[in-house]
Length: 129
Image 1: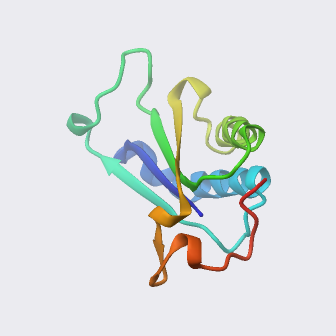
Image 2: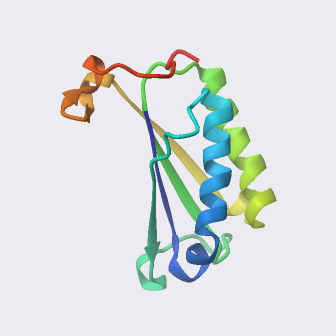
């Protein structure tokens, strides 16, 4: 499981939402061997007064948080981060300076999916990549 939340200014995020989602999903599929039909993205579009960030970031600044089942290798997680930094600028023009990424790993038993604990549900993809 990988659930993605993207925070950014509404005026900047709204026009690129679909393109950004494609870039993120491509990086997730490549790095984590994730199925194409498993896309869980949320875009939190904020007003300027609700999104404070340092002066060395531009109005295009975004924060990406990805919740994952634990079990991916360090190499796979680094591959994901590098893939995001490669694909997002190419697709959207947002510079790496304006992208921050945090990965949150959670044990499968701490997830609830389709009425079951996450560690009891069958998956069509591997976690141990």
